[in-house]
Length: 638
Image (cartoon, rainbow, N blue to C red; front, side):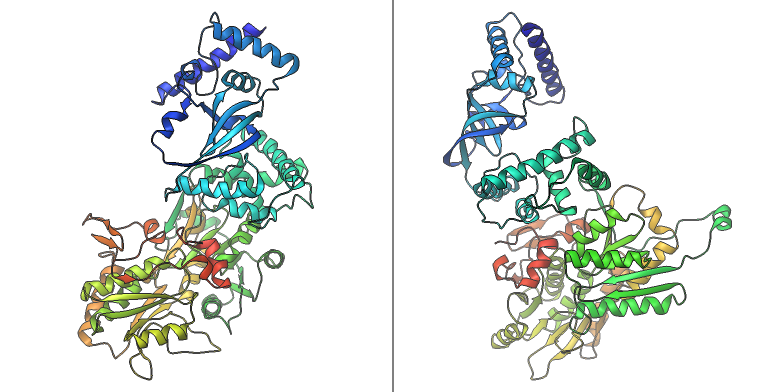
């Protein structure tokens, strides 16, 4: 029997060898010594005896035995060899009493390489053992800025607290999110009970997930586990979910998992979509314009928040434009978590067809509700989110900020210009850089001093600007109704009274009107049929953003601005076309290329004429941290 099973293992090895060879991959075990010859190692750490997930054992430490095994650790030597005889003897021993001696191995970058016990691993993998006992030494590489290296050091911080090695996540920031969803503080040291309860939940999820996904699930189990916890939080100390419940919840979120498996394909709609053409039968069968009930869910109230005030103006404009066809309701001062979910449930109970959640912080709750209620259209006001169950929308401001930069550069006398930004989130960096490029186009020697209002107060920043003779300042583009101020848009602060020069206008009413029209005219359904996440990012060409110059701006400067505005709106010019330079050097050298919408939204660099940097996480105020956690740029340092 042992010989027959060896022959089965040999066939598995030969198939693995042939597949790797046909794909142009190395057809034997990986050798750690060879990997380390190209790696800066800073330390080794003895982890003692560990239970190692079998699938994470991928190679051998030395090159001596590598050709005896295929990449799946199945044997490659014929069944008459001495190696085969030893393998079969070990196999018989395992069937009779089990393999008790731990292997010796090294862990490097979350993969394990065997020093002693290659045949034991081979036998256990053939027998589908989920784990292997091993005496493990961890090899720690030098810390770098490479994403894989950064992710590994995030894992090391997670392991230091949890001593859990079987949860290996693939995205930066995921371990912090996992701890949050499990109810643990970042630096909390797990107890044996903690490890047991989390392991129990993970094993139950893994069993259901692999039953649903087959031999090759769409994404790694650990990534799917985190997605599941984000949508269906579960405290392993308080609640023991039954497999049937996990199965039901997993089925509801399966489309989201499949979307992630495809690489989270998303499409950014930069212009409103035209209604699909109808034939005669469509007109005959059409029931007419559907009555819509729409909910707006805000985290603050319009009296205290300029952001919410703008959205409420948009809501009222919507009702005015669709009298008798649209009814709206709004919810103010809604907190995240249970209150948000209850509010969304209330809107659905009130028969709302569309729900707008107006802050990125509500993204997670919006997704959870959308998965449970697929017939309701839920949109979150954020940028470039990769979820098929909801859609996102945002105003595209960078083009208008470029025009503001043109004016600032033209009027600047001493080469000093200030810029006040609030949240270091996706899209904000593009606004800063577009403004800087506008300045540079007409005043190549001017520099922009960047300051963050979520780190320091506006008043403190303005005082510093005045003290340093920074007279032209790009302020925030909105004002709070209860505390109006003239410090918005591009402002000359040289005199006692601020002098407004330009303003970028968010026309939320136009945006909401066009979104509702996409639902009414059928463009919504036709746009969502390709299995991708959709994001609406509309700007001046869609009437969602406007740019205004005050009479204080010289006529010829206005003419330049109007010409460039026309070119942008007609698609003849982009601020991010041609050569582009950052603080570190050249970003793009191709004169004939423009950055894509995805590249603009996810921009991580600052233009070379900007003095300043992205703020550190620990310097942000609490409100900013909540937003940045959801939509922040990747390189915010902690």
